[in-house]
Image (cartoon, rainbow, N blue to C red; front, side, top):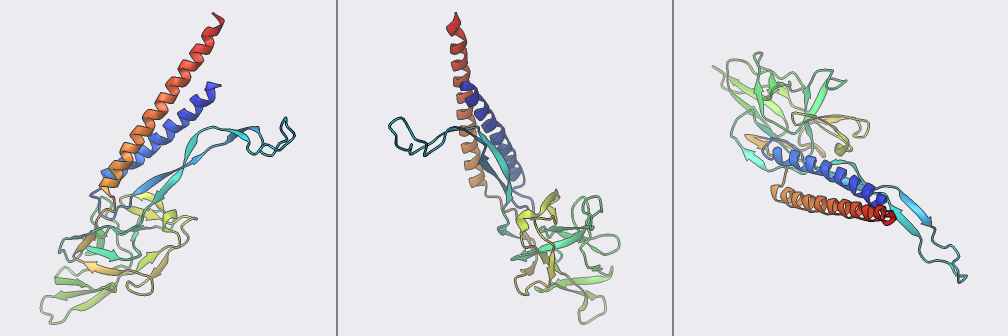
Length: 269
């Protein structure tokens, strides 16, 4: 009956609506530092089995195919894309990007993360009233490690391996004041998104693996640069057009199924 077509197309509209939401969020964050785009993955639903393959038919031979009618589609999940975003040169001494794998580890409220830490690729850091390195966002999340910049510092340098040096008035040589560590995950796509370009670990991501920038598989620190959003606007617009067309086709199926049911209802007249 056409009711199955109605149901299947309705699931298609619902799934495509979710995909449209994901695309809209990607495009909205095309200029967000450290943002990682997502994609919606689809999977088909259950099937009505009306005839099994291999069943003996009227001629005594086995049927080469079965008869199955699918019941639609659903969004199986959203998958993060952790490809490196384009470097954006700022020439600010506290702006950093990780050239390679890894995340900056910042402190957050226990209500956000049970262990009090979140992870980000955004490296737009500044200092708070205590001279501590914090993210320049509305949360002001403090960089883990307790690195403090003296108020009389005239110059700050951060090496590729994450060592922080400051030069104070009257000093001839810079002094090391801290070491930035970064973290990686076995499955970064399993991280939980909490907004502000930050992620927290989950059972799927595995625990954070901390290390020094530039060692083993950890990326290096580049100062004076920020990692831009990795959203590809062209590809997102292409996906937007495909989603619109698919939405229209599913709407037409619903209309055709409705007309079929109306015609069946009029047979008694």
